[in-house]
Length: 333
Image 1 (cartoon, rainbow, N blue to C red):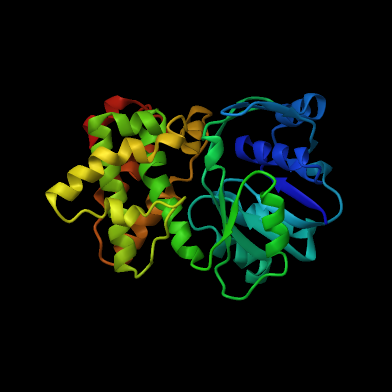
Image 2 (spheres, rainbow, N blue to C red):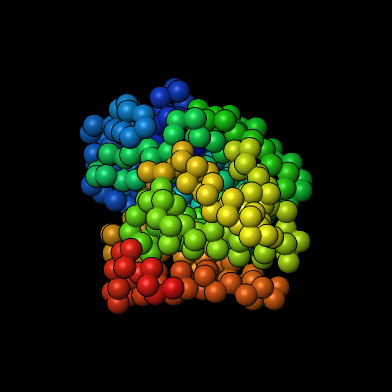
């Protein structure tokens, strides 16, 4: 079985390093020439909450040959149609593309490849690119989990093989309510990634500051309200039921939810949102597929989502150079 990670940036490089360290075949593919050259010459250097260096097979897209049974996708989803059209020629006729992207990417990929060739996976950990070949794991080693599933109900022939591959890094749970799991991750990304990008900080810093913590809590509540209106059951993440904790109905429940936020995110306190990393590198973000997606669903089901709309607008302002990521942006809410 032949496998690749396409879009092997910070997270893909670390995942690939774990897979290669287990003795499995995996190609790490990225457009970043300096990064690929560093991986070829010196291997993947992983630092942060773990530290090791692992030789890996690294390729530029133009160096790809043959077909893969499994392609793990970690590019930004605003490019999905272009990327999946390109990858279609490198995917075996019965092969599968596994998207580890944020948001709700499965439908757009299925439009190109077909539903039977798509699996989804939610990643519960984060990473930062520090330089060519050098990536920082910012989540606790005991939180390196994956939730695997698909939008359809039929079993997939490669589900067990993909699970086995990802378990080179951490525990994998197959989810039957995969859409509910997608929204669990979207809840976290909209709140913590959104505020991390707007404020230029880590998840932990967004949770510690009382003014930004209030906004994080409000973003979570908007996501829960949208899911309830859309009849979507949000799944627990790593054993934590966000709805039970954060769907406050009374002042005391809200006060409890506010107080527990820094504790709830403690294992990922050092994580810096990929959207913030994109902003720092002058790239467009996925905010329309994260906070924008919640606002769009809210509009569809009659739920007002002012905070998600504001985060989306502010990140677009940062992309356009009108403002910079800063805690000063709290005054704009």
